[in-house]
Length: 323
Image (cartoon, rainbow, N blue to C red; front, side):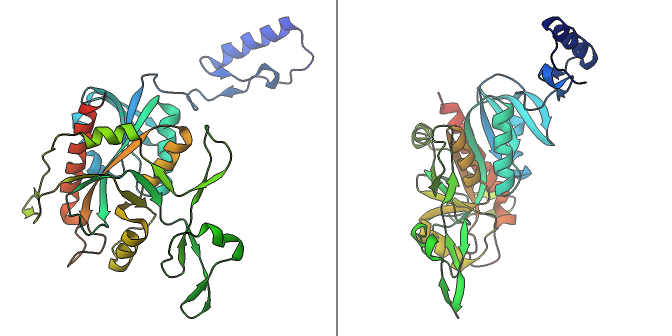
């Protein structure tokens, strides 16, 4: 239906006709005819300011979901969001999905569809700092993406060369041909495209984490007990990338290069989205394995439930203390 050179009266009549045919659907601009916006496209589900509580995969969220009071479930793009309260705080709890793309996509989705005031990530990670042990809970002060890489040209066997125009941004040591790079980012506060490697956690949220009383952390699961009693470590660095790391040499590189306590597959992506949207964030990550640094096989299958429970305990203590 073409709408051109119509009187005000005829436009009002057309709008009334569109509303009758489309019911509750929003009418697009009258000059485009009766085309309508889909009923729930990019519309916020509720207006309550909430803390987004994110985990990457089901075992991490299993501990938290039963604790949500007055739960209401919503499904958007196949992602299930649960609203309610946790430790007396309004929350929206959901799974980001594993890896960087899922984390970025679904962090943005929750920001678009809910009134999110803060973001909290809870889950497991691989330990990189040799001073930390399985079951420990880390709360890094900043996160970076270690797999934003240049794959350098091999000019001679074992000798790699970066393009001249890129060398100024390669400030961190390489792992063979792989040179870490900053990511390009913009935000509402700074729309100009800039390069950034580290995305800082919110200082006020970190201060609350620093002030938590000792949280009782589990050291046994099923028939398996840890040699060291788990503890919480606030501060330091975390790194994220698309790989599951179970390699001693890369673990040592990550600790030396990034001074990282842990590495995972999601947090830095969520941190980048939080930065772009100007939303404060913090992440609690408990060590389920040593990323290839252990004496035997990878430990994640044995200790992931213990680690997920420890991370969830610290998160709940944080929410209880949050004002």
